[in-house]
Length: 103
Image (cartoon, rainbow, N blue to C red; front, side):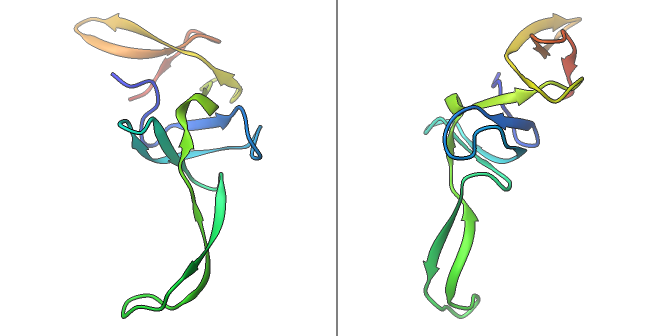
């Protein structure tokens, strides 16, 4: 089971976007990276194609999972993630508040 999943609210711990938060769009477990909406935005030169117009576009670049922490469901501050067996299901638990993370 992964600690950070698609749809989670995360806080950036390091880098130029330190302290900012956003929603995880995509997780790339093989590269240990994730795309976070509105975080680590880079500008790229896009060549014109049949579907897209050319020009300079802004898009999210992947950020390493070690630089992300899950936002606590109670107060939104960064927290570590633990696991607990709840009946017959394995659930994620916020270490900061002890609340289960829906998912």
